[in-house]
Length: 242
Image (cartoon, rainbow, N blue to C red; front, side, top):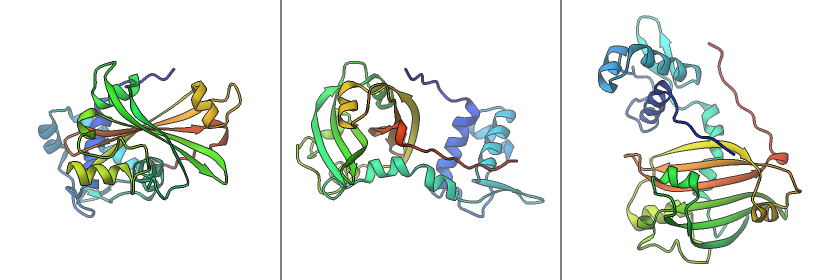
């Protein structure tokens, strides 16, 4: 069972500042607001602001320059690699991708997805499930969930593969814009159907990457649950020592 807790204040502040770097509000080479300005703007304590800035420096988003302040470095190369899994899940062209669309329909929203979409328990959502295959082997199972108000006026409910990705389809039909993504990673045992589709022996767990795609206001537009056989994965991360 995976447990989810709200991240501490300094992490949430760091995520907000990171999004502002990504969307160009804080451009590379410019100074971020001072600690005093951030304290006033976000209503947080100075220690919280300092920890958030240190986290962004550690991960390569910011750097300190003596006599000049804290400077934006831009998007680190490591981050480009880390979020590739979520980006692929959102941008995969169903008609061209290696794999097949195996299920489309309205289903009761899973608990983890309900939380991400801000929906009550037992609400119905549209699910599109795609099995990614390489050389005839199932390597990834992607279940994408859409709230009912996002489905109206689209072809997301069609049982045929879309020409393009669900993200492109939503942006074109609903005139929405995907702004940022949050990923939650956990491990669990697969359900019977999931194990069958991924051809997993009994007892082999899966890694679940819950990809939550939001607009600029923070409203979730799509949630994708990406399942990866744990016995076929090698995860690697890189960070700087301060």
